[in-house]
Structure formats: C-alpha cells, structure tokens
Length: 209
Ligand code: 5GP
Image (cartoon, rainbow, N blue to C red; front, side, top):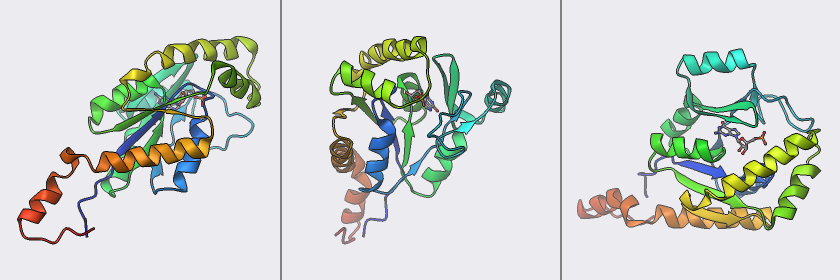
C-alpha cells in the first residue's frame, strides 16, 4: 500500500472561454480533488452561483484580503481582480488532497513560485473562431468591448502557453479531461516522485500498490 501520497497543486489555465470549468467538471468523474474557489471583484454571471463559481467581493473587501496576507496570488484581468486564497489551497494539501486551480497565466506563474511541484496545464481552443463562439455563446451579457478585450487577452495568453508543463486541446471536454488525467498519472510515476517508494523498498517493505 502506497501511503506516501501527498496532495498536489494542479493548475488549469487557458484563455477565458476555452472551457476550463467544463473540463474540470469532467475531470472530477475521473479522479478526486478539491477545486479552489477564487475571489473576484467581477459581477456574477446569470448561470453562476455565489460561493460555488466564485466568492464575489467588493474591491475594498478584496484589498483587505490582500492586506491581511490571505491571498496566495492575485491578478487584475480585464479590469477586475481575481485571487486564490491561501487557506483554500493549503487546507486541501494538508489533507493529502489534490487541489485544482482555474486561473490565468500570470497567476500560474505565481503559483509555480509558491509551489514548484505544481503541475500546470494550458488548454487551447481548437481554433480562434471556436474560442470567439464560446465567448459569445456563454450568455454572459458582456458588451462588445469586453468580448474584444477577452479575445485580445486570449491571444497574449496563448503566446505564453509554452511555459506550461502540458498543453491540451479542448475540442471535446471529456477527451481533454481524459488527457489531463493521463498526464497526471504519468507525472506521478516520474522517478523524482518515487524516491520515498524506493527508500521503503530498500528498507524491506513490500511496495505493491
Ligand atoms: P472569468 O471572468 O472568465 O470567470 O475569468 C477570467 C480569467 O480569470 C480566467 O482565465 C480565469 O481562469 C481567471 N481566474 C479566475 N480566478 C482566478 C484567480 O483566483 N487567480 C487568477 N490569477 N486568475 C483567475
């Protein structure tokens, strides 16, 4: 029995509208993990749920969380602030659970600094046309300048995708989730991850999984 399992930080990044949320939902059918619920100063979209999609806060509340040192990372995206609370991540890890973060590229960079072992994925859309359709189709009530801003930001983010550990194309969410699951399984078998197992074997333990 391998009882050396430690929780891992898993980042799912990619342009707004690429379908990170759906892929994360599909990934839940394949493996267990906690999802970090971010704080944002952006308004709630019609299909979103308070404290499930996000913790919605005012700019003053957000500033206070930052000042109190409660945020692991924050970013300003299209004029709104977003951030990951330190406890949301650390509590899951303390329980030996993986924790998934749906964040943009700047956040991913900062998470890597805090957790060098984080496994970071970047989701690509199958085409820029599909990304635009998805952005427009999610019925967010966003005006044209906001949509155009998100598309421009998407191009800039995609240009940074080579910094990530893995790039997955989200054509069909179920398939993208299966690919992420496969990457995570392979990642856990890397020699660097197996040192405790080797030690236990040499100490005379049976390490049959
Ligand atoms: P949206 O407004 O579409 O929900 O999110 C805009 C972007 O902010 C998305 O790329 C989303 O992944 C990212 N985001 C959401 N929460 C966080 C967070 O806590 N930190 C960072 N850095 N990005 C976030």
